Image (cartoon, one colour):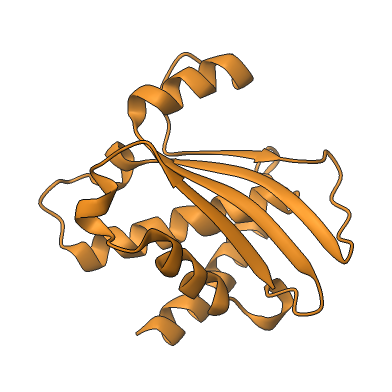
Length: 153
C-alpha cells in the first residue's frame, strides 16, 4: 500500500485539482499490482509547487540554476523495500504542467499523472542517464500510465 503525504505551496493547484490527496491516492490505487506494494507500508511526500520554488531546490540540491517540471529526492541511494519504507520526496511545478494555459483540465490531469509516475520511478531507483536506462524507465512509465488511465476513465 502506498501512502502519499501531499503538500502545496502554490494556490493555483487548487483551481485544477480540488482534492489533491484523493487525486494522487486514486492514481496509486490504479497502479499495476507490482507497484501497489500490497503487503508493505510504502510512503512518500509530494510537494505541489511552482517554477520559483523548484528553481531554488534545483539550484540547492542539483547545482542547476533553472526551473524544471519535476524533482525527485530518493530517501536512500539504493532502494531496499522493507515492510515499512519511506521512498522520498517528489516536487512538481504547476507552471510546467499548466502549459499551455488554455489546455482542458483532462489534459492537465493526464500530464500530471505522467510526470508523477516519472518521479515515482525515480524514487524506485530508475534513471535515464544512459540510453539503456532511459528505455527501461520509459517502458515502465508507459506500463504504469496505461494501467492508471484505463482504470480512472
